[in-house]
Image 1 (tube, rainbow, N blue to C red):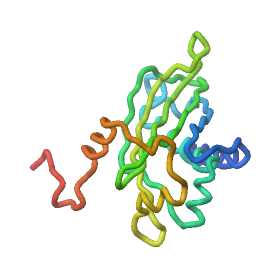
Image 2 (tube, helix red, strand yellow):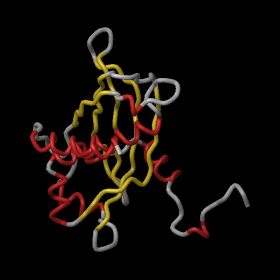
Image 3 (cartoon, rainbow, N blue to C red):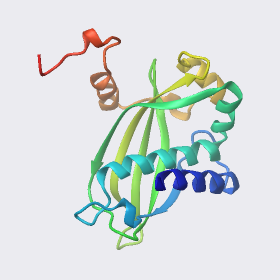
Image 4 (cartoon, helix red, strand yellow):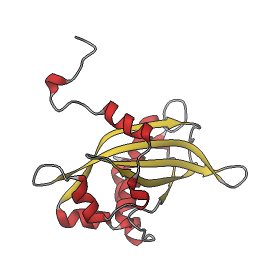
Length: 187
């Protein structure tokens, strides 16, 4: 339930926060709360994904993309995500999530979200990084094609080139279109 309130608060703050270009890096500040902790007294790995959702929402509002989606009756969904951890976040630590759109393939948008804190030298220190593959759906049904998405939000700088490893990851984790085609380790 606390993530709902965090999202609501972030929505209100984002409406008054600094505006960003559609492909700018969005920096969203957070603090690790007691409800984020696991039994080992650091932020639970599942909470990282939930807070990434909140930061993406903040980014969509501040870049104006959320308004574009509302006007077209579109909404984003995560198709795949992965996380790599370097250091733990502990209770009451302040941290920033840096969110950015990396690019597109024929079906999805790829994003990177970095959890950073000031290091001993004052420069940002990377604690964790998540990568997201997202699709966009129409409330009336069906998916929004990448060409239509780019037409609505503009062509990304650097032409939206996705690193080769990320392209492989995107295709490796995609499920087949039907359940019957899905491989099972239990068969």
